[in-house]
Length: 358
Image: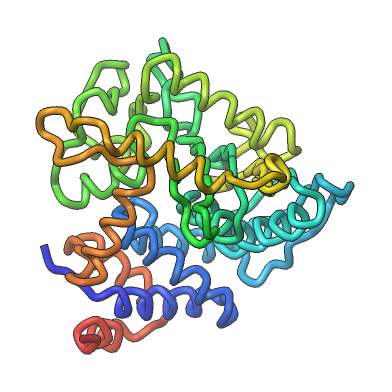
């Protein structure tokens, strides 16, 4: 599979975002976010999302340059309406507001509702942790057919409903621990990547329209036929339901039960906490580092080179992909270029751009 330098993919994503109407700064936020997802190894939330975003923009389901509206401001609680604004910018601004409020008050609860797809949730955990804040987020996915079967169900009733938590390092510059996961066994985007590569998905991740296990991602990706499974049986299913309730039902956002326009809407309930307010005597950074070191020092199980904590695989992937390029399959790249051409962009010039970046 060919690889493309991160800078070239970012330039491509920027051009597409400008093509659907985003102003320069918003387009840069989108492009940087998508490529950072690819660098982290999460191609499901990387530049492969661009064709979907183009479709949503052309159908009025993703609104460029939308201003984030403050619906409720009661000190530590903020409720923000995105109105289908470009999700990466909406969520970035929401977390920035939460960071500022947490610095003043020690903690904040931020509800972002009715945003277009906000992308990789881990990016917002990293954003908060770089500012020295601990971060917890419950996110729902609405406005399209449900694609995840609750435990015990033979059909879909939920979205992939991500959960994220991050703990800052002692310097506040990188999250020592970052957990970012869909509550489905695999994210929908990973099924899309498998379909595009002509590969099966792992066993136990999909059921067909009759409720039977399958490894063929095609029907799900192409027709929303069948369902993804929730991870960990009843545990992942329960967490997915709580993400739906906390992220959307309690915040006034669009839930999975409301009429759908076949877009992608995310609602996020985020909690940001300044660790210095929890332990004013200090030492939280050292305590976190000690716990992480204790876990890493465990004897590796057969087949593992060492024990990692959440967030390490993404950082390792970033180092590799910055050095060697981001792999992108031919079908995904063709879909991106087709979407760009549909916006009136010069396909040949975009291809040259990919080839010219060293």
